[in-house]
Length: 196
Image: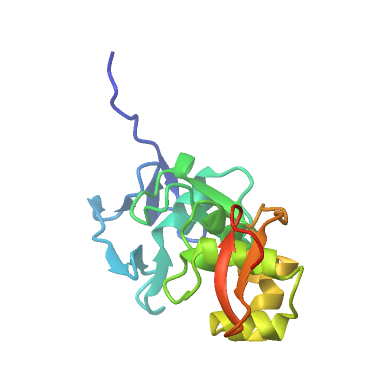
């Protein structure tokens, strides 16, 4: 079985007869019959195209040229998403037209943007979040915030599953809270300990 890809060339819109784009992500000058060198900026490949000598060069992102030529639902107002997150993989079956919101959601679902306790700036662990949810039955948000040394806003976001804590799928668990009555210090949460 032969796994070779059949290369298909199509004219670039607005540059018909001058440049063509392939289904492998290459750009060709028809006049000189050469493959253009691609530059890279922030991981995205682009090429410089000339319409004629009087008009200066114009930069084009390669993935947008491929999408324009090969995607049937191409819309210039939409973003082009790389399904595998590889910005160098500019083949048509790896590209899709999406809105900004869909592009961000796709990245979040794939884990590209860590949130909640997985974020690098987070001082709360997943266990802390479970404790906060349990403590919310007994204490006010500002008291819990003092216990964990975070803002009341963070506690409210956790309890209401807002912003970066939307992913939480835990229900409030019934657990015993242990306190030291003499010193009034919080000792922790345990499902086996009794109230002292």
